[in-house]
Length: 421
Image (cartoon, rainbow, N blue to C red; front, side):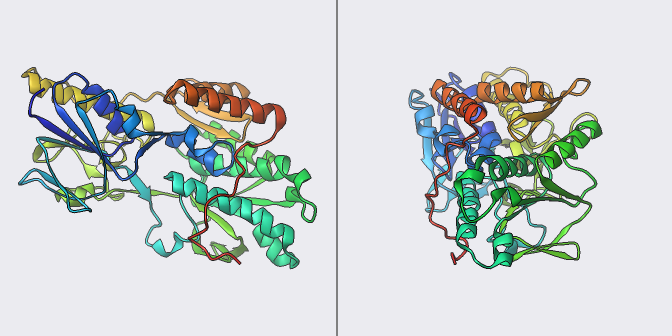
């Protein structure tokens, strides 16, 4: 093994793909992440909506690399990078030197200048977010069951999702199904079928990155499930009592934010240009401008496609970038010519609407409905890590399909973001 030290910050799709791509390259790798697990984010909303448990979509990073002596895993949070001394600083005071640095630090929620909304309108990026949302959804029904004030009860049974991208659409569909089909027989004082699920989108249509015909189908499918879709109406206020949509205030005790993301501070660490979302603008080989030994991938990087459109912030894009940078590093170490500039291959866009419908946009080929849902399910099971996870998720989906019962409806997390009353 050579003395070349590759430091990878972030154990998401891009970071893991890069580490996997450097297997056998003869380098020392240190992988740093704030959490001890890799998370399969595309199914995170199913944890938030009681379909899957946390262990079915997350895996300990150390376990993944237990048989790779070239990989050292550190649980820590990076606070800065000094490119002049080629060091990375961690919050605990530790400093790591690097020969090559890869920043795959992802993104977080963007509240467009209203960060004070976060406590009452959590986003969905981590397992903690998912279990917080799940707890709030389930507690809303429990509190409504005991509430005697009709106005408060209605507010408890009103769920507002802000943002109609894939996450917002998927959350709205599952919460509606939970309220209208799964829970009605379990409560005595409330009729959960009267639950309101409100999906708010400032733009003109849901799923704006999909073809218009698929977007229209998704909206109809949501409305069939009982979701109220409000388009062209921005949210102007979020509070513990509800949400203001345009000029109209809607009492709602459960709000979920799915309206936007902002990148990690990687661009600020390196003092390089960034786009409006904070994503670092990178070179064609995904290196930082003027810093050939520093690469930035995934949601942290602003990468343009040949047609001038940005590479989407989705798992396949991050994996492609991680694999590409591994090839660049290998070429440099072996003295071989560098690979051609990074080129993103779009494998299609997928989204589900509840447990029986989905849309898939492969470009020329567009699918919707039941067959799209099956393809969506097979694709996601395939990309899960490990046979146990694939079997567990497939069994949960089959059980829900046959019985209509969600298997992860446990209230286990202590509420810390809003006072219980």
